[in-house]
Length: 105
Image (tube, rainbow, N blue to C red; front, side, top):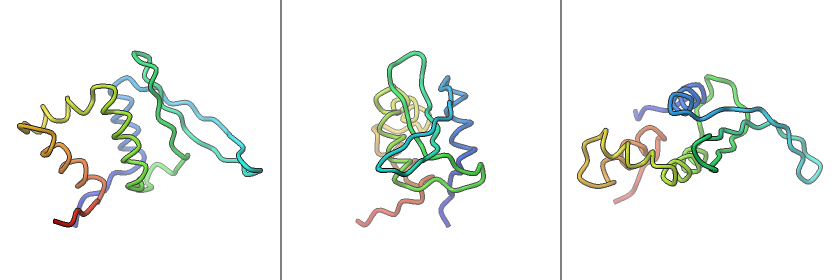
């Protein structure tokens, strides 16, 4: 079974890298939602996720959103270095594994 990442694990990783979390409430089409905005003070980038219990598994679509933002903030290059991959493929496989994403070949 592929490992999953919880909201707490993701939040901890973001905070270790300098991202600051703030709770917000929005209303769209008459529906109120509670979300968490993560912002990196070193950039103008931010990540918005629905508020979740700390033990809830992050949905793959939300992980893909996080990946997109992190790629634009330099995190992805760091993950490539940490996985000692020659290119982004090794880092992509690690991320897909964490997200529980299965890729058909």
